[in-house]
Image 1 (cartoon, one colour):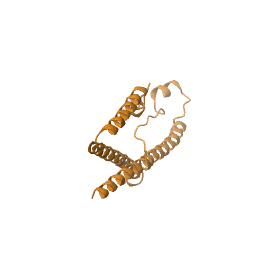
Image 2 (tube, rainbow, N blue to C red):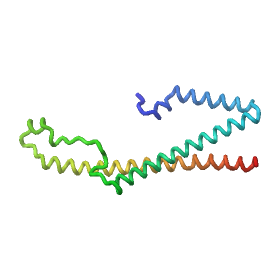
Image 3 (cartoon, one colour):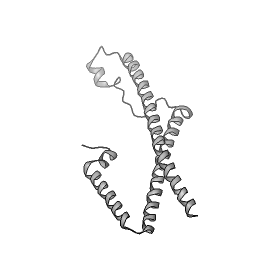
Image 4 (cartoon, helix red, strand yellow):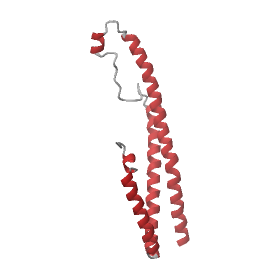
Length: 152
């Protein structure tokens, strides 16, 4: 089953509804007057410009968050949630030959790898948002500025 919001949005029925709406808007746009077309065009341009800017800002905030967590306010561990099974009373009770120190050393190495992976993942997500959001925002904003210059 689809669990993420983006996966649900791209599911079959939602995608079909989106295609039908776009086709209907195109047909209506062809038959409508020029003034209405201008309004629809402006709504489209400003909406996509805002969406691109929001994506860009989310990516920037994500990168700032990674920077702050790494360099300004260094945390003992990057990831906040972690469970240590080395001190689990059930394991200690059931396995008398269990080496707690070796387990803790192993888990500390694993935790360092997970922290590094989490940083890389957060950096990649932030950069991807900036790389995707910037052209969407700037392209639509340039089109808006050009149309304003032509009208004046």
